[in-house]
Image (cartoon, rainbow, N blue to C red; front, side, top):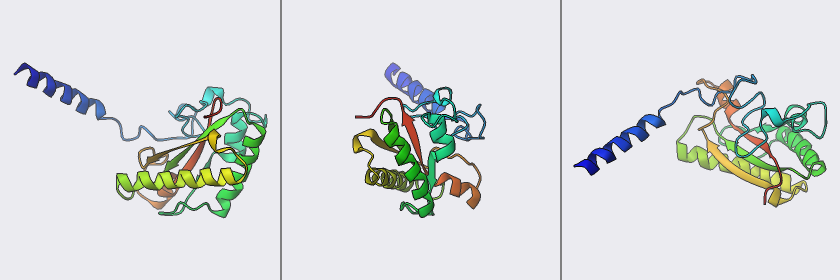
Amino acid sequence: MNKFLIAGLMISALAVSACTRPDRFANDGSANSPYGANGAYGAGGVGQSGLGDASDPRSTAYFAQTIGDRVLFAVDQSSVSPEAMQVLNGQAQWLSTNSQYGIVIEGHADEQGTREYNVALGARRANSVREYLISRGISANRIRTVSYGKERPVALCSDQSCYSQNRRAVTVISAGGIS
């Protein structure tokens, strides 16, 4: 009886701890946002306090703010658009100059579709960006990919303006190279 009671309490505690605010992944663009002013910085990336001076071309702040740390995708697509190529060319050039950094490419999707489909789509988007950067001369061992699917939206609403912001790949600078 005690084993069942303890097991039931543990399951209840886990269930309650899984409940959270639906806006936990919102990025309001402020430095107070959990993702800083420039997007998510998880996965071992350099956080807001470590970005440096945006006017210094060697800083990660310059990368995020001037070059751009994200590219957007069309609905249900993972191919790199001409607009995305411009951003990725800048990223490749910066990464070539700053070889001490590794990157994590985060693939994301909008809220439409199943969780499984969106995780797979996010992975395809991250891999498309990875392959493009490799084709521009960035070593594959400096790049890691992760897919969050629809789990980390930057915009929360149910219309195309939000959906389009969430269909993205974000390049996160990692302190030190990735092996």
